[in-house]
Amino acid sequence: MTPSAQRKTHLDSLAITLLVLCCAFWGFQQILIKDTVAEVPPLWQASLRFWGAAVLIWLWSQARGVPLFARDGTLKAGLLAGSLFAGEFAFIYLGLLHTSASRLTVFLYTSPFVVALLLPRVVPGERLRRIQWVGLVIAFAAVALAFSEGFMHGSPVAGAWLGDAMALAAGTLWGLTTLTIRATRLSGASAEKTLFYQVAVTAAVAPLISLALGEVWSLDYSARAWGSLGLQTVVGAFASYLTWMWMLRQYPATQMSTFTFLTPVFALVFGVVLLSEPLTLQLVLALIGVAVGIVLVSRRA
Image (cartoon, rainbow, N blue to C red):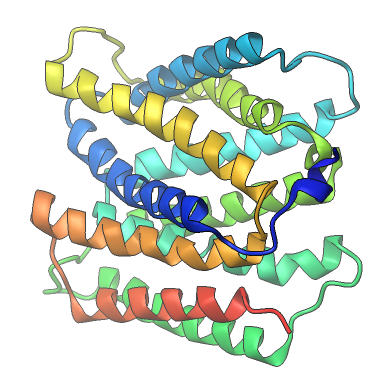
């Protein structure tokens, strides 16, 4: 049976449960990175994470008989998707040095709007309807309002603009990664191979950036830091991403995408409760604007 024949027309209880769990962890993983970055340098932390994830995906694929290195015409697209993915996470890890985890996640989730704006250029027949343009405008205005906080003297997040800008760059690269997967031969590749391209390229690139930044490498870290790295690797870079890609092949992507607004909600709650991050009116408005925008942009006639 072909993958298209297996696709479901609506989200069932399994899909909804998995989506909520994934979004909750994706919100929490920014907290993990932020909490660990004081002990483990950001790009070295990313290197350890994606080395581990690459090994896990390879072992998983070996056990399931999924060919990762067969010639199927996906190499160029895979390297492009991997490079974009590596850039995204470089900006995420470095951005958390300059802004809060909750703010970074809200700005990161501008990714769906990048996809919405550019998808009509790469997929024939796709075009934005009026309601989707409304969603884009709402989200843009809300994000601009929150971004301006970083330039305000006396604001509790004054100076956060650099990290916020990196989060926006990461969101843009995430959107471009999604478009690359959607518009190339990767769309027909297995979830394991698509994810392996992204993780393996990042595992190769992150150490080079780390060395260029002069980060000090070590393995002598606390149990808390290793616990964080373990969760980032096993749950974040392996299980949750593989689950998401599997669901994209089983359930309607537009219905799934409306759940992504939960991730910045979880990040905001976790950041305020666990890291005592400042909660500002502008950030709350940005969160609401992004959530409304995602719902509207994800709507179909």
